Image (tube, rainbow, N blue to C red):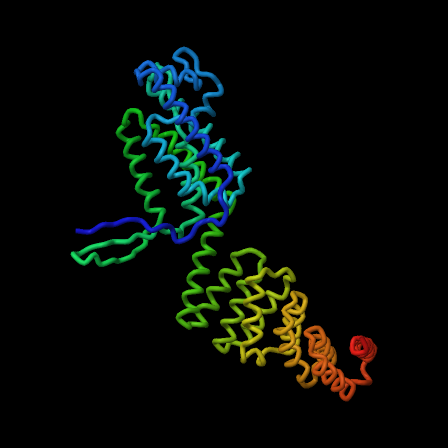
Length: 400
């Protein structure tokens, strides 16, 4: 005997969705109103018909606004619960990626297209009575279509309890398997023309979600995420060269963010491929806007012992980027390395940077030592004026 129950998802968006939350509250309020309305009429069959008329489904004329009110009404309790579960399983992710404005616009458009497609299909099939399409299924299905393109790596975590001692075993299942199962059911319902199953509306909305996701390039983003996970796995297994090559693929496919190039450079350094590490680092340095993740990777590169095998010019450029981002300790270590480089034209400037950073970090003694070393080595260079200004600042603070 075994008991299997879900533990949650492997990842989820950080913020609550605005559109999904408002739609959820609205559905619950309409469901409460429906319950109160039907209870006052002893849940008579005619009462349900009257409720649908109030929401825009008139037996003789369908009001134009029923296209929107039908989002909020459901055939029964379980119909509403399944739709709400789908909204939070898939709509939350899609809204987090699109933003609430675009999600609202696209989901309403998918809903209207699905209603029109299903109505045309049923008219073609010879239905003479007014067609009722109620529920937020089209919005859910639109989210499912976009989800399966963008979020292919999201999985459901499960726990199995088995045996007389209730041993536990955890496993994961891709959430897209649920979409595949649902899709097969819809195709089966369409093929056998199951009555009261709006398979055409569902498949139309699902296709629209796929199209929107592809036009937005979500398939490329998803591929980059898969490659990123592979690269991180290779890093954990200490296969540096393989990880570096995968990071290069991520960098070529991804955005302008330099993190992937920095990660590739870091792994090339670990693998001893110094020319490739220099090339990757140079491409990262071509972009001056670095996020926190890129800066953390740059700090790891700065503390890598093999960085001394890179050209002094590249190390100096990395130190300048870290200094601009106020990572003074890591920048200081790099400036100290290149200040000792032989025949490096920027060595005097690097030594001045060492003195300046020591002064910023509050170590006046080491700042004075670095400045004194500059005067011994480079007193006749054109950096003399900058050294004089720095010495004046140090002297002025010491007199305070």
